[in-house]
Every structure is written in structure tokens, then in C-alpha cells.
Picture 1 (cartoon, rainbow, N blue to C red):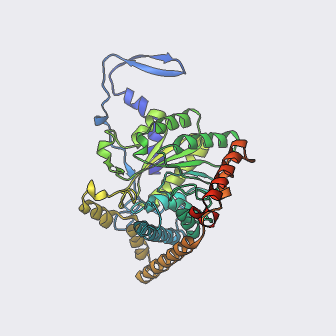
Picture 2: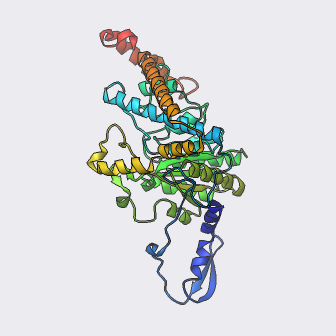
Picture 3: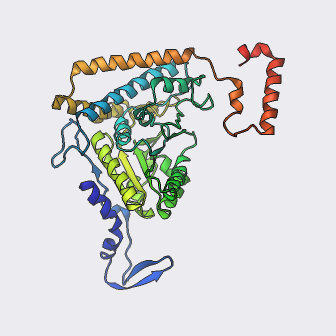
Length: 420
């Protein structure tokens, strides 16, 4: 109920605010059907005077349901345990492959430490047919949909089993089968793409939405504004899911914007918004489910802002201790870790034990190491795959390029072991 009422209040904010100005002296109609009230005194709307948009929460830091809240509909022991198991699997994968990069076995990696609640809470609330447009920290969403450890490892090693055939840098996953668009490096490009795909779903009258993940740093890109405006004006069935984890690489939020986060921007585009405690997996699940219902029933986009914290470095190319204190990272890990919060809840309910926890972590680490070993031993994609997939039939220039490559390899065979 709190989610519904808050989202609804945003749509009626303008008339309520207008009544606070001064005496109304009529109203005027302007192009586009917009009706604007006139007042007899100047009134400056200062964002400093606005109330801070609240964050929805179900479970506190100690794993207790907060007063007045209850478990969201659909959450039971089976689903809760399954979400936690996936959090452990992702955490194990992040630890192993982060170390593998440090050992020089893969070239790049990004972890999701501290943001597991946003990933699995939202992934469990959407439908498999919904199209995912990810940024680069949403491996957990793909994992929830069934992407295997072997598939993750194959992509990271760019081997012959990689669905992308070795064309992408590590962590740029994609799966046509699982409705997960391939990640691309340029920041925020997925935002307008999601609006376009959603508009296509609308025209085709398909019962599904697009969900687009991005960080608060990406919201500083021009594509963010273009995408939200397109989605709002064309009434596209798209859910924009902002992960506000505190930092855009090394830039803290205080240096990124002066407004009330990302949620405050929704009103300017006429988009309902919901802010949620991103470290509370139950709250994320409930608001994502609610947002999806609103999108399909009301025929309009929704913006969610999850308030979380990035416990790890931005990537293996980053050392976050250069711009934030180790004590800050430790504080968030100790007091606001979404995995610990869910574990405490399950143990309090009798759904989990410390013994099961230790055993699961051992199993998942072993499974990840096995996937890594197998992927590392596989060969790289065949050279001819470089010229496939983009066109149904090879174009003349591609044929020419392929021939030039083969001639080059034939001329310098000592540099290309096994013809690769």
C-alpha cells in the first residue's frame, strides 16, 4: 500500500503545489492541452524546500520485519532460500574471477559486492519474457534466469564456448534465449534502446516489458534524458531501474548532482517513481513487482531508484581506496550487507542454519573453480566466426577481408599457432 500511495502522489504533486503559491487569478491554456494556473505573486520553487523522497523498506539491518510491514505477497521459504543461494553463487563467482584477473588469467572483471539485493530482488519479480537491458553489474539477473557458471566462464575467457564468439570483453554477457541483451561498454546506450524495444512490444500488443538497469552515474549521460522523455511521451512499457550505489567509478554522488538523487527527476518527465532500500531484497522484490503491474495496467513507464552501496572496486582497473576510506567500506559491509541481512532473517525464521551456510559456500566455490578450469582449457573460436552473424550472407567486403586474413596467416604461419 505504501508503494502504491507514494507513486500515486507524484502524479498529483503539481496541482497541490500550485495551491501553495498565493491567490489564483485564473488559468491559461497552452499548446499541447496544458492548463497552467496564474497567481498574483512571484513564487520561487526551491528544491531545498521539497521533502526528501522516502525509500521503501520491509526488513531492517538485523533481518527483522519493520513495524507495520509484512512479507510481500509471493515471498515464502522456498523463494527466499533460492534467492539466498543465488546470492552466494554470485558472491563466489565474483571472488574467484576477481582473483583470476589479478593472476592474469582473464583481462577484466567487475563484481557486484553489496548489490546482490537489487539484482535478485528485481530478477525474481519480473517475468522470463521481459527483455533485460543491463549495464555491466547485473550478472545476477542473468544468473537467476538460468545462465550457467560454465556460460559465464566461457564468456570471461572468450573461448569457443562463448555465445559471443570472443568478440566482447569480459563481463559483457548476453543471451538471446534468456531475453538478456548483450552488454556494451559505452555508458547509458541501453537506456534509449530499452525505450525503443518497449515501444515495439506496445505496438505488437505483447504482454511484456523492457527493464533497463543503470547506475546513478549513467543518469548524468544525455541518453538518460532522451530515453526517459521518449518513454514518457510514447507511453512505453519500460521499467528504468537505477542502482544508486554511491559512486560513479571514483565520483561520489555529492559531486554528481545536487538534486534529490535520481528519483526526483521522474516528475519532470511525467514518470511515476519509487525509491527503495536496495539492500532489502524483499522491498526490491515488492516494488519491482508493483512497478511492472503499473506499467502494464496504466500503459506508462516507471522509474525505480535503489539506494545501495558498492562494496567492491568499480572494476579490476580501479582501486577504490584511493577515493574512499577503508573504514567506510567496512561500515557498509558490516551494517548494510544485503546477504547478511537476508541470512539473519532466514535463521530467525528457522529456514537456514550456519552449517548449511558453510556447506553451500564450499560447494559454490568448488563449482566456480571447476567452471574456470574447464573454460581456461578450451580453445578459442575459429577464425571464420569473425565474419559471421552480422549479415545473413557475407557481403563482398567481408569476403575480401576474410581472404586477406587467410593470406596473411599463410604468409606468417609461425605467428599463428594452429591457424588461430
